Length: 101
Image 1: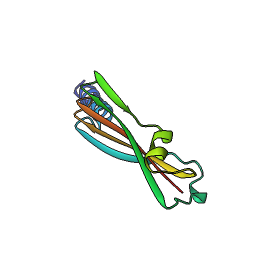
Image 2: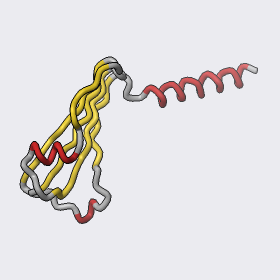
Image 3: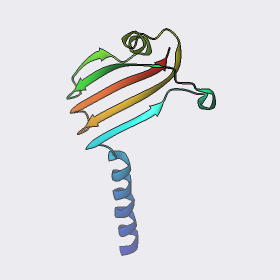
């Protein structure tokens, strides 16, 4: 009986760590490209972002079109997505970074 209780507690702790990973602070960048072996970044960089506070108020435009406009890019070559999160939904920033000419 004691071993099964320990196993349940261990599984519950692992589930909590998995579900709550990044809940204090997270800053990740992921590619939006699907053909990474053929990506040429170009000479210009453009960024756009949207922000969220307390999970209640959001603003901004994190789209690729806005990022290209901000970087004066007419031909997109690649794109990344960045996400910053502090204390879960206390503050979240989504950023799109595009590369091109």
